[in-house]
Image (tube, rainbow, N blue to C red):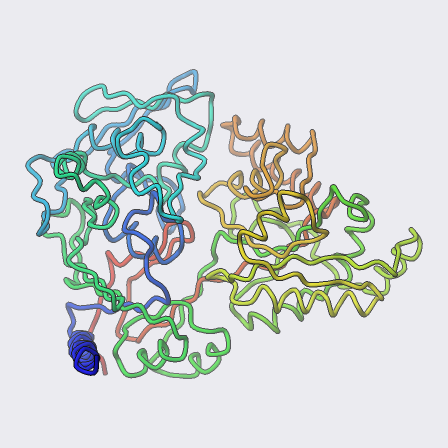
Length: 536
């Protein structure tokens, strides 16, 4: 046993030393996230660590979002046409695009329409040979808006395909630019199926992206290398290494010693010290997430709008953000972030007015002898390291106006049971948008068709809001869509079925000799254009 330990320890030292020396090389970049990717396929793994490790590094999609203008631009498609009846899109595909050649796969043809149909129908068709592959993994799910959008994908020829919609829907391009619309190799899948190892498709990846997979080990080290036949602009850093470092303090220390070039998600308490160091820069990017406090509108007393409004006025949002997030989150008064094209800038900020809240509760006869529940998940999310601390601060604010509450900390299975049975008064939670369209936030939270596990933890249903959601999804006039979403935000502010707390920022810290990496709030980090100079 001692000999076994010595071997492992020595190997770890060798690996550490190896990658530490690589971090000083201009053609090697070491990125240190806080957790491992769950798989190497963003179709099935939607956590941030998996997106960072896959979407932009390994794969391409038919379209992508321009990081500056946020418009949709060609990727593997060179262009597209929308039919007059708005029920189909025709896409024209790029020629002579090479898939990765790796130690485990050598392609014998270019990318074509067969690969698009194989990749996207894997999500859409339960009879697809790869639809159920790796289905036993607890992180595997095709939970995307895309699955309810398409009737069929038809091959016109090798480089032309047609998407047939179930009904006119303006969000197809958003879905095709999303992380889950990456294109896999059908030829590779056929080789795996013939070898009896189809599960490898999600763990030994083959794509068309700027980097290709080299190796990964149990120590949390994943090595990517330059894809020399990439169809787009070539990368300037040939070796991309992910070195998973879970501990915040250790991750920061590795940045200081040069063992990491970039680290993900520094602790909020570290941000001030980092900002004072001349050799470290901080990247702060808005994300598609929202942290909120949901009121169960199907259960007394939160069936009453005035009760919901009063509880919202009783919570000091500014103090909550300062105590939990320091400068790593922005306050919000609506469900949309300020960066959203549909955000209503005339929205009224949430006001902390505890005396007014108390007065309202007294006027309507609130039972101050009762105790409300605050459900809180045990497991924190990547963008919220302390659901419980937030619940404690809410509890303290409520107590100041005489409202008693119990915080109920639950595991995921216990939480789901409570939510499904409606056995809760309020719930501290977070929601992530999947695509760059407000519908991906509004529909899960507000639709009558959305279950509590899909996002509607307020259990609220309004015919007016449902009609607005459905009409806006069919509307192709951009100005009309904005007006509809403005109206929707006004209704939600008035009804106050949710108390929106914050949009948590995506934070990365990096050395000053690094430039050019981009972070997309929906698809993860992108190292294609990263540049590295010699450290000073």
